[in-house]
Image (cartoon, rainbow, N blue to C red; front, side):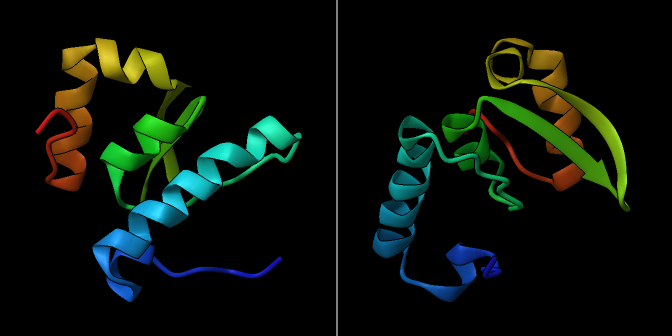
Length: 87
């Protein structure tokens, strides 16, 4: 399995968007994807299930839809990663 660095730091934003779109289509082909990324907005958008780690420890996990609906959970994650999901 080849590792990819945080793609938004490696490639132009347009190419980054294309890569996320490609990754989001893989489960439809029966391919399981474990995506490790700091781009919370994209991860919530293309994932079925999320795990939020802090210093290697699982802080919270659940369905991506729960992360989108629960503003308290979104704010908690935003605090951890200094990023607004709904921005």
